[in-house]
Image (cartoon, rainbow, N blue to C red; front, side, top):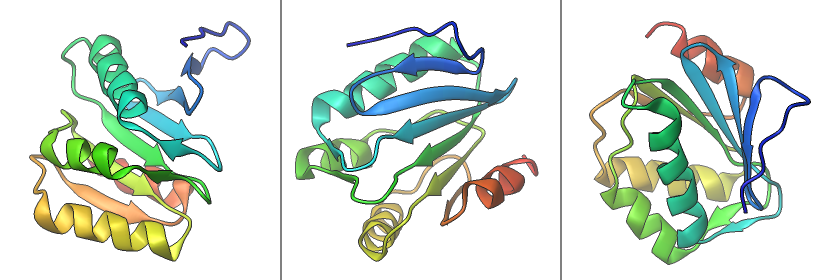
Length: 131
């Protein structure tokens, strides 16, 4: 289910599992909801809307996974195969399990753009400013 909001000009999309925000003119934040199991349909929703939002323009991307948020095996496999078009990508995680999963994912899935994992959103956004 897709909801558009007019209350916050930075808030672009909301679904059952994720909110998408425009941090600035060249940076998008995909903020997953806490205590969520992200399934393949959820991931495809985000990737489809990423394509519609960006209209082939490359953006800097922040993807944040709060505590107790994880992906199903099917969603992880799809994410490994998918190349997200971006200038650079910052992944923000909160738990050791998420860190292990993220490191494993990027060890076997070389992206065409710089990717770095953080535990703090502000540090992630600061890193993206270099691109």
